Image (cartoon, rainbow, N blue to C red; front, side, top):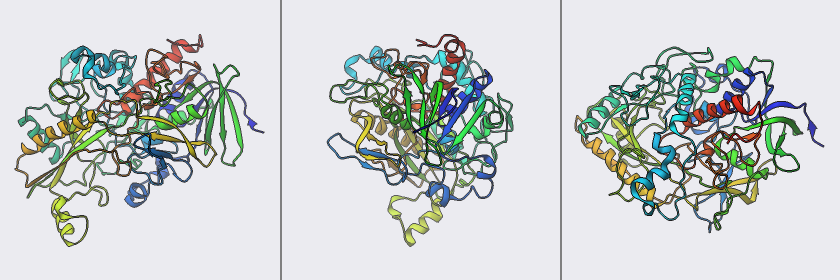
Length: 588
């Protein structure tokens, strides 16, 4: 018999950035909100305190802040005719757990989508004709426009204290910004991060190659900052410990640094940690969520009734919970019917490593989003007609740190160990840089998420099964943009001693780290026949259930998803506050 808690107005599943925003905003309206987080409590002090957080072995290699795969994992296969097997070690992506979620250990690279990204299928057909799209490609428009999201992008940037140089503000181009970016209603809250030698070299070379470099928008505060909730953030110290680490200085935007100081003391908010949600509960007619069922830290089954349910877990976990709860029709790749699990997408990466003889980089001086980039080859920025693919990538040189295990590079000829490798490492550590091609991932009929028929987690629930592989379209895109990165390398001065190009090749391998940018599976749109949620992140079939996050992306444009999922969350809250609370029901 389950323990039944007192009903509340809102229950949030997970306590990362989306649920933290939702809880902060809805408690301001006087609603009683409970958040359920499966992981432990974490705060800047003492969990990220200096110097203990700068332990690369503990956090960077042994994944102290990430999901415990002995409790819950996912299974993976490239093709439907293969047997999916469980991930036993984190690899290609790093699933977060605990208070703050994946934004505790992200880098802070904060991009807006381009205006045409949100109508990418329509844009592609208008420009190239429907025959240009591969038969198995299932991309679609988002059901929302850049113009609708612009003010919400800005709100998220003011929450996080984004450091950057605007491209266009109220129709006027700003020197040094991204000329391909959508128009903004205001500049970034803070100026760009200070430059380092590697970004200066990239900047000069990109201009020589005829491209348009600009500083990457960073959720690493370039100066002390007070955000829209009155929370004070510290200026970045360039310690080089961002990705895989919590920030000891409250300089990197995370819920701990941006929201929790004002949210946690509220009497109408309650956080419960160590609580694994297993089901979203439905009324008998299946048209209304009545709350959630979870397993508490003592192993007891608990039910939390609520008028409104916000499923704000990580993208793949949102999909798993919908499937386990019987919400919506599961996607069937044979018939194309159903939407839950459809259009899983990722990112398609390539890189060029550049080695110099005498240049000094000081790589240990770094920040998670300290970089210089070009958008000339981003998804909607250039003519694809001669190239035979859709999508694109931004090209960037990062200086995120110089940690001795994960952040070293040596020429391929040096091997991976031994005296020759040691000599190469000593030479290249301070005199090399890399140019990344960070590319889009289109959606396809055979890339999807469903429940594994064999494996279960520690709570008896079926594991999520991922079926994914790179397709020719995306591999062509990655080769094209990586070749453009090579052009930048060739234009660098002083002349590089060695340039090594690393092309993305298939099949997709889930073992080496690539990006934690999993998207899709509970996609958004303007038609319930082809989407799970509408533009307010509201489930078509269950109007009092909202599912924010990157699970809503119909495909993955070439930039990191965090800023867009933040803007979508604020847009969702605006709809709940201004319309849903007074008249519960579908907002579209």
